[in-house]
Image (cartoon, rainbow over all chains, first blue to last red):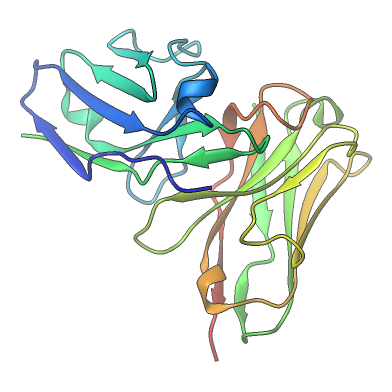
Amino acid sequence: QSALTQPASVSGSPGQSITISCTGTSSDVGGYNYVSWYQQHPGKAPKLMIYDVSNRPSGVSNRFSGSKSGNTASLTISGLQAEDEADYYCSSYTSSSTPVFGGGTKLTVL
Amino acid sequence: EVQLVESGGGLVKPGGSLRLSCAASGFTFSSYSMNWVRQAPGKGLEWVSSISSSSSYIYYADSVKGRFTISRDNAKNSLYLQMNSLRAEDTAVYYCARAVDSSGYYYVLNYWGQGTLVTVSS
């Protein structure tokens, strides 16, 4: 199973909104509403931010939102804050009954 | 408080074996499926394996199938990963992660350990 495709990096200024895309195929992202997003700060464990495309776990800021169209899922962060600077990974269930991660996107807050 | 603590990492020669452990606390371990996810130095996340709460369902990434074995001991609140025939490309931080349900195939991972480093080198 090939990794999902994410941009290597995105950036934005405090207060702005950014969107990170995650492109797969009909065998993963496009075929199931089981896309998750994880945030990882340097040297730390990943943290679940979004699950099932657009659901937020309790405790995650409502500045984080998720969506999907066809084979591409997206994570949007509004009102960017310095603490949002991190790596972000998408993950999708696949037709093999296993998950696949994206390559990761480094978010820089300017 | 949910805690997952990995151990067992270290330096091993190519072709060697290593057994990772993950000690769980703060929740009913027997009610949740568990996963191993790894991250090579400077690289992205790679899912490795999952096991359902009762060990009925077990899945592996193609990259480790036939070499790695996941298991759990619900009486000891522990998860394991037996790694055989190790290769240089298995070098990574290995994370233990808890899923939100018991199935073993719903991969929403809401709790993660801090990871243990496995280095495969001669």
